[in-house]
Every structure is written in structure tokens, then in C-alpha cells.
Amino acid sequence: MPQAPKSGRAAIIGRPNVGKSTLLNALLGQKLAIATAKPGTTRSNLLGVYVQQEPPTQIAFVDTPGLHRPKNALGRALVEDAKAEFENADVVVLVTELGKGPNTERFLGGQDSDIIALLRESKTPVILVINKVDKVKDKSQLLPLMDRAMKAMPFAAIVPLSALRNDNVDALVRAIREHLQPGLAYDAETLTDKPQRFFASELIREAVLVHTRQEVPHGVAVLIERFEEDDKLTRVAATIVVSKDSHKGIVIGKGGAQLKEIGSEARKGMEELFGRKVFLELWVKVVDGWMDDPAKVQALVREPLGNR
Image 1: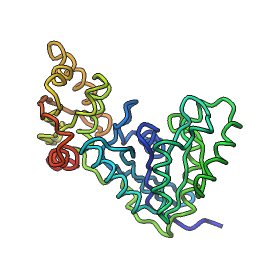
Image 2: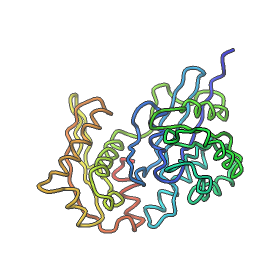
Image 3: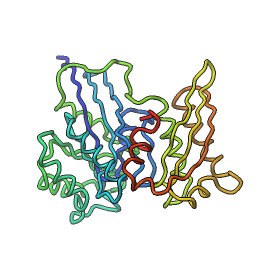
Image 4: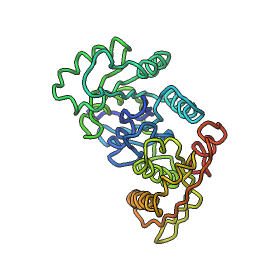
């Protein structure tokens, strides 16, 4: 007998750098969220709609910034945004990882334990995802960790998977579906609620993160100054904002070589996502200490010229 259609909203949460954005991309079967090895890459709640024909299922996954103990206005804003999202979800997907190897003493400790303390106050079903299990050769080592997890909190389900290898991701979808509402809620063509200029800014920031030193990424934001389309071409003009004069030189590089490399990589990413040619212009400017100023965080991260 055919199963009834179901739909709902699932918030993907967790501490920084556990693979939340990689998981979203794996679920959708395409790159929607930027993902790097550097903590703090995700700065906006990003919705991506997963659609399955049999059984009929729609899940609005929302990738959120990493939950952490904030040290500045930027960190506080990101944590606030993440908390607001999981409070409105039908299902919460808490993503963690094993680290370099299974360790029952450290597993779900530290920042994970802080997040679990928050989730205990919620009545929303919580599914625990143990990511990066491809690094564990003996999968039987996962069993004591799963037992430990259930003692920490009565999770609705525990799903070990590898988002990078797209391994066992379908099991997560099945576990989430158990807690969704009857009926379908989204247009069949809906993928996300973000405009193209949002993804332009994110792809530029991703290229900066990949090509610059460790101290630069946390102080980088991107403003889309112009986003225009005609029959053949999308024209994008953007400003890369950094928090220190020394960072401006790093982003530009000797003779502008670094900025050229950043622009080339971002442009290719846009052309792949938008399916058309892109002409990209980039500038770099300094806004001293913007991460410590709530008003500047609001302007540069939450609503920079309407691209969020």
C-alpha cells in the first residue's frame, strides 16, 4: 500500500566544522552550501528543499552556523540565528563527529554537551548524526558510543554516516520522515529561498577562505554591489571586506595575483551554479574590527545590501 505524502522542516545543527554543510549538499545531491575545512564557514541559515518521489516526501533542511561559545558580536549573532532556527523546526538533526578515533570519554563532551543541554528543554524530536564514520575501520566500535549517546539524551534516532561519501544518508531521510506532517508543503521546483546574489557572495567568501591564511577568514565578509543579468551574461560586482589593513594585502596578494585567483575560482563556481557565463569584478576594503560591532555585523552579515 502506497505511503501517504509527508513534509516538514529539519534544522541541521552542531558545533563548528562537523560537516553540517557537507551533509546538506549530500542530501540535496548538489552543492548549495559552501563548505571548507575552516571552522565558522557557515554564517547564514540556509534552506534547501529535499524532494523524494517514493514515498512522497519533502524536507526543508536548514543548515545553520556552528553553535559555539561566542567571543564577539559576530559569534553572538550566529549563535542567535542557529538557535532561532532549531526552535521552529519539526525535527532537529544534531551533527557530531568522532574526531581522530572513537573515544567514549570525549564523545559528546565539550560544546556538544552544551548543545544537548539546550535541546533537552525542547519538545522537538532530535536525531543524532555521527558523521565521518568512514574514518572508522571497525564499525563495531560505534556501538558503545551510540549507547553513551542514548544515556546523554533520549534521541529519536541515531544515524552513523559519512556526508562526504554520501554513505547511509538515506537512513537519515527515513528517520526524519517518521516525524513529519501529512501532506506536501512546497512547490515541486523549489530548491531554496535565497536569491542568486546570496550565492554569489557566498562563493566569493568561500574562495577567500580557501586561498588565505588562517587568521583572515574570520574577518571576511562580502558585499554584492551590483548584480545584473541580460540574455547572455550575469554581471557581478562585489567588495571583499576585511577587518585589518594587513589582511587586505593578503587577500590582494603580490601584484594582485591572490585576488585574481579568488575571482577566477568564485566566477567558475557561479557559472556552474547559475548555468550561464558570469563577469565578476572584485574590490577589497578594510572595516576595522567590524566583528566586534553589532551594527556592522548586522550590515555585513545579516543583511548586506539585501543579499541575505
